[in-house]
Image (cartoon, rainbow, N blue to C red; front, side, top):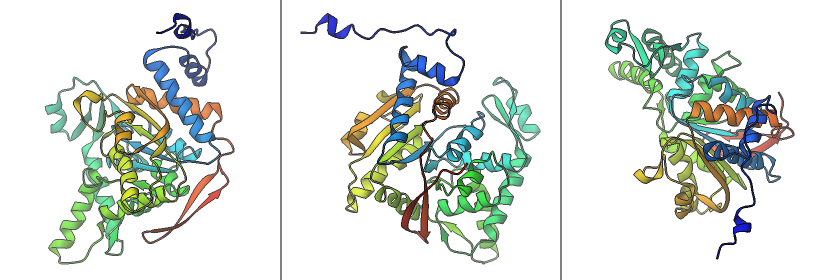
Length: 352
């Protein structure tokens, strides 16, 4: 039988803006509120615990959705700069739009009720309430193809190619620039399904028509490289923004490890910001409990999900983490690759 006194112990506290100045203050207040505000605060608590865990888990960030168009480019770049993420798995649109902005091009505000046929006449593309210049996109596609065309004609992992793109950028607010600078692997499993893929298809066409060799992306090498990140980690923490391919790709890493004889017991910390719900049976909305049936999430994992749109949820979560100072004293990971082999992982001081 339930004892009333046992369940009526922790009171919901009303959010009081007399006591709130910073993002950290707001998320602290969320810890005693309810519904998705408390869920987001629980995600923040799990993230903080992962960053302060003395075992030093490898933090893998999965990114899906129109995050650069939503204005989160520098938020993600700051996650790299402040050492609160160690590897990124993403859809191709995010590094592409990051590269596009690094070239000096912008996203523009609009109404979601624009005349889309009129926009098509002037080569302007709409992402809900945001516009981009299709002419500049096509120019950027060609630049990416040109960069790839300078490479030795062999198979490359997406991690290798993202680093090459990052090294071609001079923009402190860029995701790819900071990833290259701080040696953070960026893996794009569905690279073909993006404007980067369009640029590489242009190169393929030119070289194919000229009967010349060309570089290519090797997706199974991606599998092997991210699996090695897991093999070299005593613990891992996963943060999913949205779901889709990045979420499944990071989840299945544990299954690959098991099949290769490196069972690490699943991810030890798991956080997700999503709008997808579980009842449709899709991966984006599946719960971490469901993932435990596959062995993808550790039995004792510290886990939390907030059902909130990413442009709001990620901003608040990272604002809290940066202002709380949870990142201070944490060492970076430096990966030493020899081709597709991760030979060692070194811990180095956090140099800002």
